[in-house]
Amino acid sequence: MAMSEAFSAHTATLLAQAEATCDARGAKLTELRREVLGLILDAPGPTGAYDLLDRLRARRGTAAPPTVYRALDFLQEQGLVHRIQSLAAFVGCVEEHGHRHAAQFLICRGCGQVTEIEDHELAHALAAAAARVGFAVAEATIEAVGVCRACQKEGRRGAAPEPAQIPNSGGRVAGPHR
Image (cartoon, rainbow, N blue to C red; front, side, top):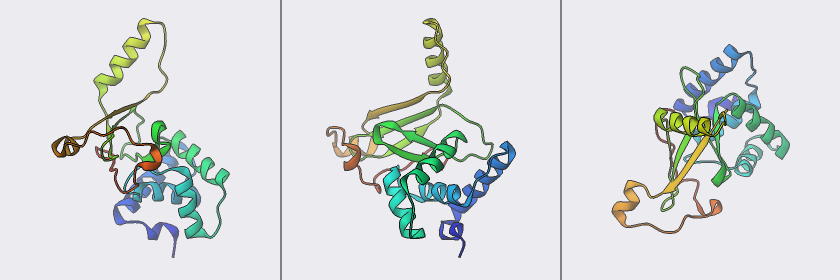
């Protein structure tokens, strides 16, 4: 069985889009890179590099940290994943049109849910503020920590969990990319 067959139908569709995006750019989505992307896309929430390493080892029998990090570097360069710095984790971002965009994340400190938004006004406001002080923004990732609607309704307003305390099953990447 091919590695890509082990993914959900939705993820298989996204992997095909990612491959087309890479082909159009002259980049190669190798089987390993495809598998790492598939693991990220199939995950219920942000996924750390060592979680990916463990899952690759379970699937392949062997994998080394440099292998995973090289695959993640490629996927970030191609705009197929975003790194959420505060969680030391990755989320997929495969779009039909393959355009790159500023990453903006809302991270719930109550349940760990991560929602990606694409607010052009926010990106323009940041670029304008930077320009006022003579700075040109090349790329930006915004991570806002707060409390989601569901946690507000349930009265959960706890302290921001440490990345290791956020269960992988607690987050969902919402928005136009998933």
